[in-house]
Image (tube, rainbow, N blue to C red; front, top):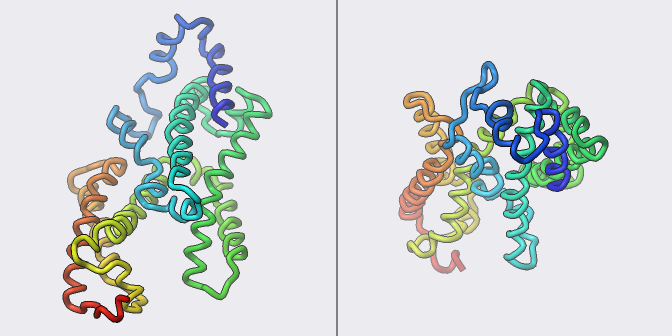
Length: 280
């Protein structure tokens, strides 16, 4: 996919007037990355680009959703394959995307753009890229729904989720707002990533019990619920009152969720401590 992205970007450059390396920088400033947003869109600064580059996959990494896939890995080094795909793949893809959108003169539908630049290979690349991006997310959604309905077979739940998302993807109004959607659902999942991090790495060191809900046999544990709701409420407040863009809320929100979960865990576990026998 990365090679197709690169090829498509190079193929579109002559349409913009780039016929040699010396032409590129001038065309890039005048036609590709002009700094002028489309009508109705907010202007992205350097900080938008930097934060989005790091947090566009917040749901996967900071939200700990990767663990639903990588928990089956035989070695911890396998995680580098995900990092390489995210950093290199997205870095190249976004550069190529800027060139392709500029060459398309306003049309931003991914299929036609890719086909016009790289032919059938471009169209196939879009399909495969969409599938590989959606596949782990659909699988995670299937796992989550099966946790609520354990009697339903996993493949049936995953198929149902896949059909719903496939139908939703047919509507351009949703697909064309992908950046906002990715930032929003990443922000929603972010506090749970903080909860998992704290529970796994910090609680034992702080004299608190890991997996407290499982040890106590609780079907609802207030500490993560409080951290999740309170963190999102604070992020919403910062967005509405101070005007902080949604792309910037993930980083401070994660640290806030860590503090809130630790505080809630200390309070609740002191009120109902786990006996040594039950903990073992």
